[in-house]
Length: 157
Image (cartoon, rainbow, N blue to C red; front, side, top):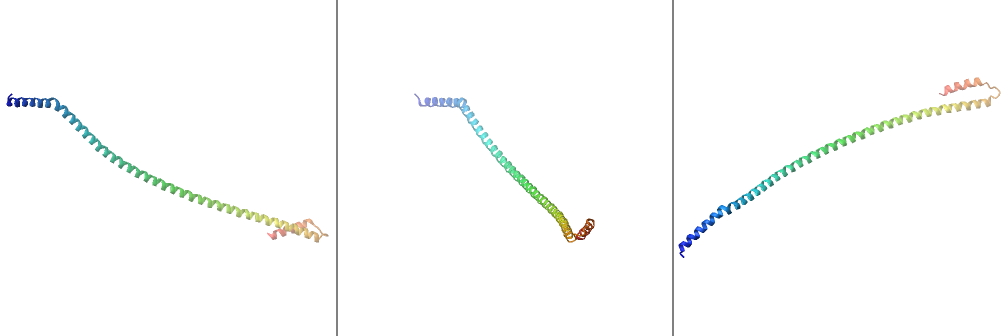
């Protein structure tokens, strides 16, 4: 065998192998690599988009929490104000009721004192009549005595 013929034959086989590889083996490998690269790129872009969405969602959550806190603060302030107002109204109402009760008690006490004075005057008049009757047993005139007691009653008032 000749060395040149062997080299030539090997060169022809190498080119046929290279052509076959480039024509039938290389395109599916490149297609698989391109698809893999595309999937990786899509995954990375989806991850970036997810990060951006997450950041946006976190920002919205912070804003909503801030609004909720402000709303809760406003509600609490309103409730405290309303509670203070109700307490003040209750104090005023209780003061009014106490004042009315005191006035009613004073009026009742005045009426009771007036009744007691009247009862005392009646008893004094009865005692005076009884005493005068005992002293003046000889001379008893009921009409004269009643007039005298009425006059005495008027003077005591």
